[in-house]
Length: 97
Image (spheres, rainbow, N blue to C red):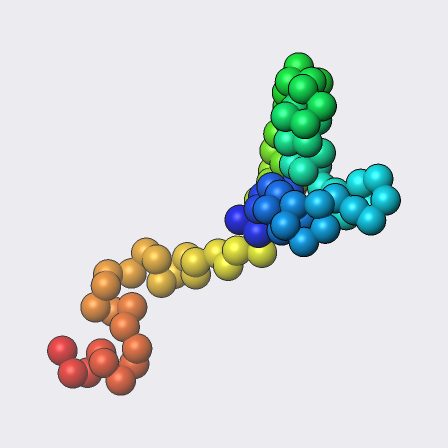
């Protein structure tokens, strides 16, 4: 989940390595484009709208990922959950108590 969100926020690697090139935005990400438009082109309103769109995209992707991850969770065994703690132990430890 954290890697999904951080993948959208990549700016420094693109800026340092390629400066968004070669060409016009070949390696640019959404975050790189937002910052470039906001500060280089001096269009803060447009960059803010792009940032809100990026927020919506990340929120939807995160919700989908959480829903898929919750399906994969292992449900606790109901009979073990209802037993007292000492009887739920491994068979080798039951006789030791």
